Length: 181
View 1 (cartoon, helix red, strand yellow):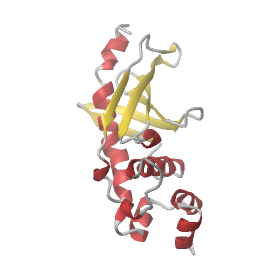
View 2 (cartoon, rainbow, N blue to C red):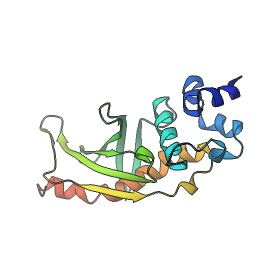
View 3 (cartoon, one colour):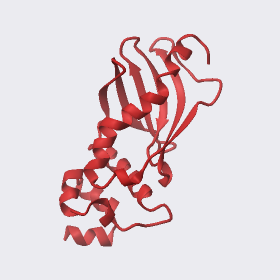
View 4 (cartoon, rainbow, N blue to C red):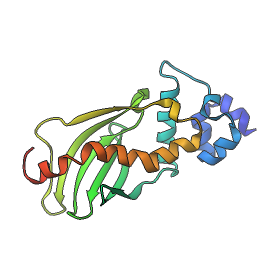
């Protein structure tokens, strides 16, 4: 019955309806993501983007996590921007207690990459945040071939994704703290 729904209402809606996790999907589709029908012009990257979105919404991707980078501790708080439907992150430097808020939605709109756009520097809860005077944007190409199974998506999101994001954002901390933006 459930397998019929994949065809009737689509893969993403079926995953949402039954709250199917990556491990369950790996068992249902032993050949991996390639078993999902490749629809629209974007193909596999679009499907991976939709899976990231649905796994986040139903709780299979961490909404809040601690991460170590260059011997420093950071807290990542993930949430969806309701207006743009893009994934946002508040990255908090736990030593300084300040944060950089970024849009960073992997495979956004079906593209095989990770666009990162700095939204604000948040000095502290009392002083609030400031937006940079210039746009600070990055784009990292992602290889969809690295995502063979559904579990590959969650493993990448929970482990590699923070590292990739911090690699781009980390040089900005001192510039924000010293008022260079």
